[in-house]
Image 1 (spheres, rainbow, N blue to C red):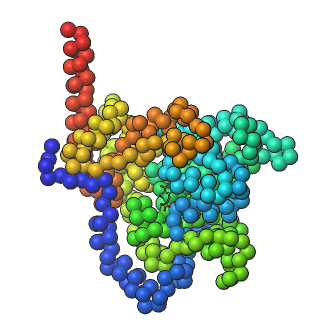
Image 2: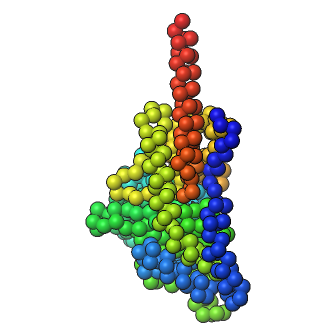
Image 3: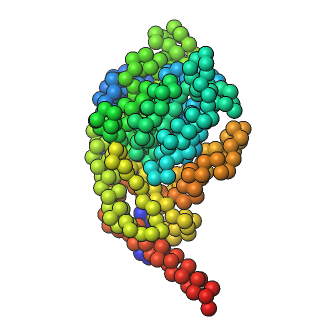
Length: 410
Ligand SMILES: *Cc1c(COP(=O)(O)O)cnc(C)c1O
């Protein structure tokens, strides 16, 4: 163990020191024009981010939670609806569903990609729902309520299998809203369209977060909705601004959910660095793979041929998560768990009456996952130390279990 190592889980200071010379003039521009809310900085960023995501429209909002909520409401999710998503995501996904007036319904994840499992989704729609004769829409048999939307989450920076999800959505008349809050710049190869497509352009609408730790992060809070649907974009613009298109003429009640102009200006300049940062994350992921591949006691992230991940997080699996995290903490290496308790077992969702065992893949994953340090400025020598400590821990684990079984024999 090297006493001098200190490898943070995430370094948010270095990129901002590096960009200080670009960021300060943005703040100055806002100060000198008093353009704090809306205006050219927000519009400029919206234009650039729409182009980046290969969508017609982008509407800046105050957070990722607002983005997913507004995208759902604007796409037509109504109070009383059921919206399908996964149990292994940040609670903001389901908060957005509930705050749109709907109720989340969970479907288990794929054991390898950790994203929504299309086979489980099909099973839910075919077995646990019946088609409503009047509307043609699926109705949950037990809850007796209509299922209207799916929110696939592109977790850890890798897209869900969108072709399969879209196929089911089309068959059952469901709308798809992406939670792209961890997937700025991630790509998906659509076999239907024979083309690589950007996260944020794969559903009716998508929500992005610009929370500081995301791949594209503000120096504060921020979010955006991307869409190719003009109506949806128009509705999100109204929802973020008290339901008005014209000042003090309110077509509906909305929210105070606007993107701050200073944040928009900072995001616009940071966007120019995003591909470089995502490439650096990919290089880090490749290096972890080279250093850790072939170990029996650790499962590395799986990237299917149809995904180009942007590695928002680098998540491995091991049976002795507690021991590994303690060992790495002693070596001054930061780790985290995303996420320790699947949403269906959270106290906040007790009223949904799910139980342990309902989503075995998500539950097993939650007990094994550890997120290793991952950020664009992470250096090769730091990764080597992480790998060395991790492998050292695993070897120790094997030796102690071997000596235990030896002791049991004699
Ligand atoms: C960060 C995140 C959100 C919420 O974003 P905020 O900007 O913090 O509101 C939603 N979903 C997922 C998957 C996230 O990681």
